[in-house]
Image: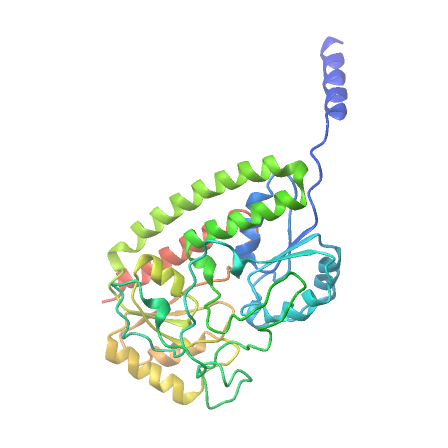
Length: 345
């Protein structure tokens, strides 16, 4: 009887205990950013994700459920129109009903310029100047997908829009894959925590504590990645599209070029022939595909060369969403590079 009474008393006390204040409705565009938001919201709530599964923001089409989630959101996090162009008009339509945070504008981010061409092996990887290579307008003027410019840049139709948040957007010269540097992830996380604490002051303490824990994990990740790729950082490799500049810049790995700059515009036969010749010329040891895009292109460009193929997943298409995804994503990139490049001659 005593044990039963004790259980009843404990149950009553649990029911009577004050509940943690429910967090706000938060919507996030892509998995890597969703992971950072989910880490900061742990114990408070779970953010919704727009680009799920193996879908890519480069070629994503909004679903009715996405539109409904946006309409119900109190806070929306995205990178910006240079990456998730499909969100530009839907976010305009919110008309101030949600706080929209463009994380490419987060204070403290290191931004690198968008590279015009697919082959950029002439860069000096020993210095810090990757972000200063020429991009002008040439890489962007065929953004409608004209066949003669296989290395066209991402569509810039979204640039210059005002989302009602006192921002003017002009990301035509900025590489938007900023999360592929853990130091940039820390800058984004700080902006996420600040935004959530302002939108939901009742849980500000939880957000702050979660940010501190996340920053420690990101510091550990940074050190681990540097150690992982150190033995192979001088071996040249080619990637499917130019998404890895921030990883390259941080860890000084030797990306020799990309098959295409923008995955919206797949390369033609002439472009593939050029890359094939470049791989043979450079002695590139690995060519990396991405799970969201056509893997046969990789086989075409490495045929007749000693290069091996691997897979990199910069947008985490193959991973389950959640707080740990960002760390899995970054560790997988480091491990894939080390594995392929170590096995190549």
